Length: 292
View (cartoon, rainbow, N blue to C red):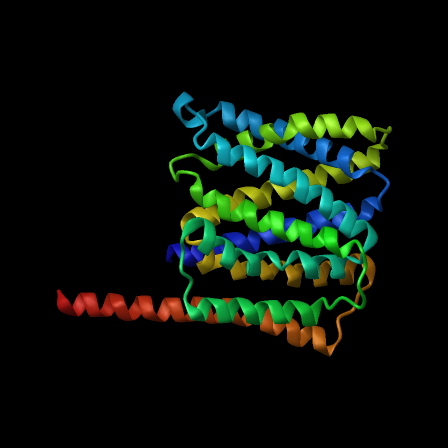
């Protein structure tokens, strides 16, 4: 199994957790102020990660690329705040339709920040997935909250692209721990501005969201360290399928024929990518064996 295939599978799993987090936020129904939600989510995440971080050797706990990690921590705050507003005021499907502009944005960002040059085929595959996203989760009308959804997409794209600047020898746990820690001071100060008591049920939903987002972040770190962003970014679209399924289960959102076509367009690039990569790898291995 190639690094690209592993990266794609990790992103698919990560997007499953990210979709569950969106469901938890939607169920909060705006009752918890966004700034307070972010603070509790990041605090819970840090409490979960800390024991794993402490179990590592001292050398493994050391932070590398502090500036990049700090920026990624603040991107979490911006993106999370925009996400809560968007999901609260838009339907789950409409909000996610805009969120999934992120993989499309990652192509130019990876070219500009990382000097990567994605092949034309990758651009076409990403575009097909994006068109499929619009078909499955087509926004019915413009809403001001869509701007916040776009903000989430942009911060998510930057967050994932910047992980390529973090050395591979730095463990996922260390990356997550420092990123979460850097996000806490500002989130705590902002949360005080809109503080209010929250119920046990609300805290439970916040906790579910925290665990799911933590899982996504960890899987995304590994995925984008395994392969260039342009090679695996389109796998982010897999979350759209999960959102549709969860929409049916929790919110009675039944997809029509156009949605089914859109889902096929989203899955097609992923399936073709894996099939072509596997075939070429097999041909290469056979050629090497004959040469020997």
